[in-house]
Every structure is written in structure tokens, then in C-alpha cells.
Amino acid sequence: METEPFSIAVEEGVLSDLQRRIRDTRWPPPSPGEPWQQGTDLAYLRELLDYWADGFDWRAQEQRLNALEHFRADLDGVRIHYVHVRSGGTPLILTHGWPSTFVEHLQLVPHLRADFDLVIPSLPGYGFSERPARNTTRDTARLWHHLMQGLGYSRYGAQGGDFGASVTTHMALEDAEPLIGIHLHQIDDRPPVGADPPTAAEREYLAAVEAWDAVERGYSSIQSTKPQTVAYGLNDSPAGLAAWIVEKWRSWSDDLATIDRDVLLTNLTLFWVTQTITTSMRDYYDMRWHRPEIRGPVRVPTGVALFANELVSEGTPPCEWAERLYPDLRRWTPMPRGGHFAPAEQPQLLARDIAAFFRAL
Image (cartoon, rainbow, N blue to C red; front, side, top):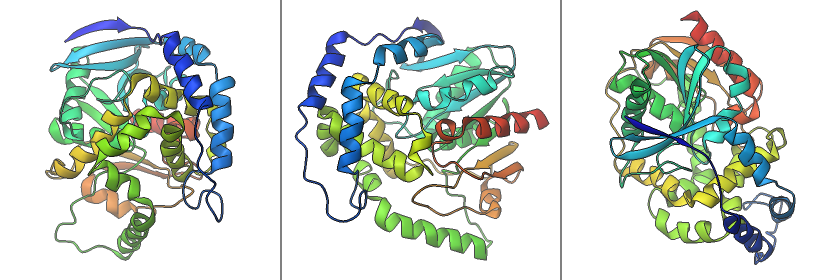
């Protein structure tokens, strides 16, 4: 595996162009009814973009990011960006999801670095990672095994949420041998129901998911069928990009105010300066039309921290739902607060659960 040190250095012209585009935004009229009912609230977005253009200090964030060690590795012909935090502890790879970047999991670093060697990659097609023409979470799982073993780790753990949970699951399905265990803060893959009919709790959960799909799944339907069409607007307009992403961060967290605004805007800026919103959305297309089959249960010790406190609830999966796919479920922790973006919302709670899970192993 070929690796090279990497430093984030966004050209000044890119940043000044971003500021100009924000200031030149052609705003739509406000939607009738309650704020956020028909999508991202106009007043909120205008205030956020005013700060993005005239208050947010990208150079300070860039300096903070570059205080960590960044690399790019050639993995099977795909250039993958990752952060490596070395302490001599248990090797652990952390994987983010959509619409996020590696920055989300950086919020865990202060809480985990004493006990873990952390590898925090950018998913293929996000930020500074390249993306092949077709890529699924199984493909990424194979790349992550290649990455960890290329770094000299023969035994390691894996953790993730959203697409990162699916990548972590497929790491266990593809090659369980090197894995000490896996930890998830969402369940992203639907377990095979098999011969056992759903329990009452599972039926209640599936009904909640169906109700959520009816009013919240529109973004996914677009991204899994015609991502290129919506990409033109998102790649050209900072307001469009922010509206598309921030609406999800609000709906899928329990309180957007708990997420540091600079962390949110660092994520947005990374999508903007790398022009990777388009390639990130292709995950939905490939996972719809080329979704890897779940081949049997996961035979690796598994921990789940259940952050199911979203503002717009998708339902809370019961433990028996998880045990269908993860029969070696060693830890199941319902959390009192925090949602989809747990590393950014509640990093201490999540880090504590990760550490306790791997310590028990």
C-alpha cells in the first residue's frame, strides 16, 4: 500500500468565490405554514449563510484539522484520505455516513485517543477521497481491511454509523478474522427475517419506518434514481447545498443547537471546496441498484449504542431486531439523548460506550 502525507490547503480564490456566491444568493419566498414544515426554514438558512460568509473562519478550522496527521493511500487504485491518531492502543477504524465527512468522528478523538490507535478515513467520493465509478458499502469494507492491514494492524476493531455502520457490518461479513469486534451507533442494514415472524416490537418499529418513509424519504428517492439532476444545483449554489444538508442534520438530530455551528460549517465547506456532494450522493444510487446481499449473520462480537432521539423519529429498533443480524450482541445501550450524528451531538456518551465495549472484549 502506497501512502503519502497530506495537508489541507484550500486556495484563497475558492474561498472568496464561495463568499461571493453566498452574498449573491437569489432567495426563494418563505414557505407558508410552520417553519421547517416544507423544508429548510428561510430565516434560519439566511442567518447561517450570513455567518458562513462573514463570521466562519475556515483558515482556523483548516489549521485545527492539520494539527492531526493526514494521509492519502492508494487502495486498489483508489486514493483514500484518512486521519491517523497513534497512541499505541487498540487499533480502531471509525467510519462516517451521509451527509457528513470525517470531521464528524474527529469529535471523538479527545475522548478515545488515550486508549485507541484511531484511523478515520473519508468514504470514497467524500472530501479528499476518490470514488470509483461504482461503489457499495461492501466495496468500501474491502478497502478498509486493505487500509488497516497496510498500516500494519493484524487485529483491529471497527465502528460507524449510517453508511459507516453498513461498511462496518460488511467488514465483519467479508473478513471476520482480523476483527476484535464491531461497534455501531445506528443499524443501517436490514436483517434477514428468516423463518421467525416479526415480534410485536419489530412490527411496531417497521410501521414507524414506513410512516417515516412516506414523508421523509424524498431525498433518498432522488439520490438513488437521478442524483446527477439535483447535483447541478447543489454543486453550484452554497445556499442549495446548505439547505439540502442542514435539513437532514436538523431532522436527524435531537437538537441542532447541540451541534457546534463551526463543525456543521466545516462539513459543508469540505463538500463545497472538494465538489464532492455529487459523488457522495452516488452511494444511494449504487446501494439501491447494486446493494450487496447480506450473507448470513455477523459472527463478530457486536456493540450497539442506540441514539434514536431524532427530532423526526424513524422509530426505535428493538434489541431482537438487531440480534437477527448480530447474534453475538454483547452490548446494547439505549442513549438518553442524541440522534443520527452522535459523534458530533454526544461525543462523550458515544466514546464512553465504545471504550466500554472494547475494554470488555
